[in-house]
Image 1 (tube, rainbow, N blue to C red):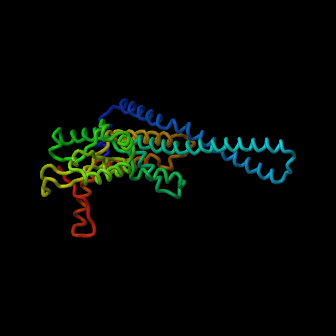
Image 2: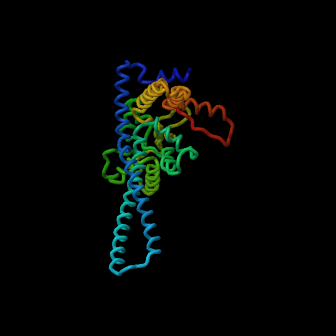
Image 3: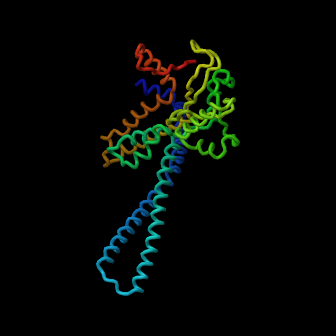
Length: 339
């Protein structure tokens, strides 16, 4: 009941009318449908192309076996057969390359679409990528990247979030030694644009290069900054306190966790849609789906997911862990700085 009340408290849908919720849900479903639509074309085409490539290999093998059994009839016939087989081999190689390219493009697009869809679907796929007993190794291998390499948001969106939280004078509270600008083409160039579109792995690789270069540079403050990690809910930056906070003096290194923009509305709309769909499916006669308790499963997933969107809950949990494990030298938890 406490989780249910908490979900209603933070949900942006609580103060909306039924018509507003339906309209918001309709727009969300259109967005998700547009993300899924290309997969409805790419997957069938890839399957057909795979069958054609597999059939070509089978025919080639049968032809080679038949050639070993039959006697050559004439030199002209043998030359024509060799040319025909060479042409078929070339076509089969081209089809195989197209099939491999399309397969990679399909997996890459599916990964991008899930990241774009939002935290709800990222969480579902994160769970699925841990179930080797239910899904193929290829599925697990591609989507396991979502466990710690999700795409982050831009530095401009980070500054907007900091302004909403601390006001326009947030730079007097925390200082990011290296900042990356979305319009900074001179220092970033094509590589910077590529890394901005990739996930936390590329960000960490660039951060390592920046740290190595800063050791030989006299003005490290001019270097750009990127997140040191990005998850489905937030991304983390390395910064320093500009003024003392409690027992922590100015200059103390801190980790700043910034939530991705607009994810609360996305998640609440996703669960609203899932709840309605589950309720409709359970009430369809003759399907007998009510015994699956689909609506209850959606509600349980929602009650687990929504508290993760409130970083104050994480801060209180860290405080409790620090208190419970106080005096344990082998275990350490970060100290949250509460405003």
